Length: 93
Image (cartoon, one colour):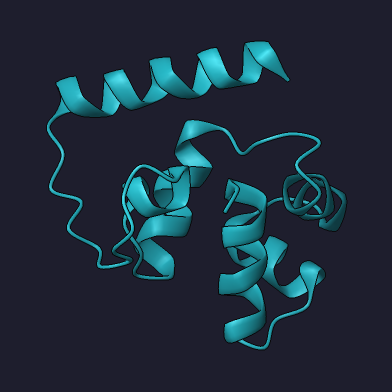
């Protein structure tokens, strides 16, 4: 499952439109649409915000962990590494 599919799943489970979901994390409906279509991916700060607001782990959002449980007790070093991974992923899109 892609990050876009996971975002779509979260949004639909909460019964939110793309507009409403975007408003919750301060991005446009167009951004949500692009994420869900895997045209682009969220910035690191948005991944973290989605994780916190919707109580899912960053690892699950990124597809590196199957469990959705939010156990994001990351150190600054770990968050920096996550940012680097997302930059690499973005490079290949």
